[in-house]
Structure formats: C-alpha cells, structure tokens
Length: 317
Picture 1: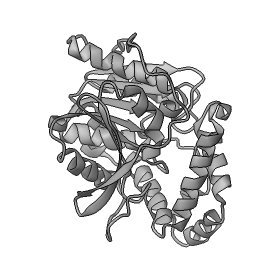
Picture 2: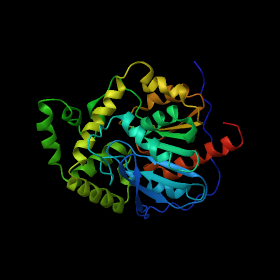
Picture 3: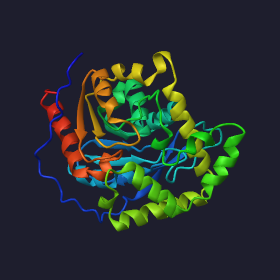
C-alpha cells in the first residue's frame, strides 16, 4: 500500500478572519445556454473557481475566498438549480451535466484555474479535472462525495431525501419536505454539516435562513435538489471507466484532499483511499471539523491550499 505524503501548511500572513464579511457580489454569465450566477471576490493573481456541494450555493465559499484574495481572484459558481442560477428546460442534474456546465464556464476564463470543490462539488471537480486537464492548474477537494456503497440515510440533511426521488412514494415525501420552514432547513444543515454549530455567527445563520426563504420562492429549487440527489447517488453505482474511483487516477493536477475528522456526511475513512488514488494527491485531516471545512475552518483550509500552491511553485508537490 502506497504512503501519502503529508500536506504542508503555509506560514504566509493571512488577512484577519472577518466573519462579518457579507456574501460577495454576484454577476450572471452566459454559460451553455444558462444564465449562471457567479459571486466574484476581487483579488490579485490567477483565477480560483469554487464549486459548492449538494444543497449549497456560492455563499459557501465567502470566508475562504476572503482568506485567499491576496493570492487569487475568486469565482464561486452557483450550479444550475442552486443559488440564483435557474436551470434551463431539460437540464438533467446528473453529475456529468453539472461538470459540463463547470467546464463551459472555465473555458470562458483566460487561463487554467485553481479549482476547489466541496462534497458534490468535489465529485464534479474530479470529473472536470480528469476530462479537461488543460483547464485545471491545481485541485482542492473538501470532503468530496466519492462513492459510498454503504450509504446511511442519517448522513443526509433529512433522511427522507433518499425516498423523495423514488416513484410512487416520492411525490408524497417531496410534499412533506416542502413544508419545512427556512429556520428548520437551516437548523438541519448546521447540525449535519458542522462539528460544532456554535462556531457559526448569528448573522451567518440569518444569511442561511434568508437564502432558504429565497429558495422556497424558486419554482425550480426543489426539483433541482431532488434530482441532483438522485444524480449523486446514481454516480456511486456507476461501474467501469466512468466510476469516480476510476476517474481519480486520471487527474493530472496536483491535488489537496481535505477532510473533517467529524464529517457526518461523507466518512473520513474514505480520505486515504481518495488521496492515494490521485497521482499527485495529498491528504490533510482536520480535527473537530465537519463536512464543510471551508466554512468551519477557513483560515486553516486557506493555509493548506496556499501550502499546496507554494509547493507546486517550488516543484516539490
């Protein structure tokens, strides 16, 4: 069994962590017939593109983008059906289709990017990096949703989500889920995704509640979540060359794999295999951290990401 080289942490001075930072302003881009909403963090340096997870949005990267803005210009994308990106008719919400959207967006940028993905966004980013190595300079995967053939329903924000995509019973379950208030959805997210929900400032909780209220008014948001959930689960059982485990060895970019030790959604036990499967992969496990390390430990994640970038520049990754 191959060993995994440790991921270094940068010692560079970071901006003070300002948890009062509001979500970065957004703009719409024409991408493959979509009007894709992208939140832009003005900064110095090459582009960094951030891809959120299932049920998330571009706002999941607010603090990390702020920590890295002295080194990169940040672009956090709302995948179609999430945030403020309305999906076009016929969009199927499979991981491959989400990956195509990200690829089309990366093609609009002038150079290869630092690509960062969390959870489902991590799985999508693997697909992008494996199929289009010319677009990706480095890859950072935060608790990527790699296949789990022993999935547990209690690892979903609501165990009923898995039933919502089934025929016959699905319609009733979807109606029940739709009755959840914005406060209830936010509470579920905090308890599932953070090792210690108490670290989340009150104003961040209010932002999440307002975002959930906005989603409740979007006619397409519920379907996007349900069908993306199905697409993610379907990807776990995809055999052969399209399996995510088969795609990882095809990623040529230097890759940092970050995992929260207390991740309740995607078990940290998958971290070593994920990093070993990547030709240039290294793993960092963060203690007292859940599924969204970039939100719970943005300064530490920033130091890990910068550590990779510095090592790549030194040709020592």
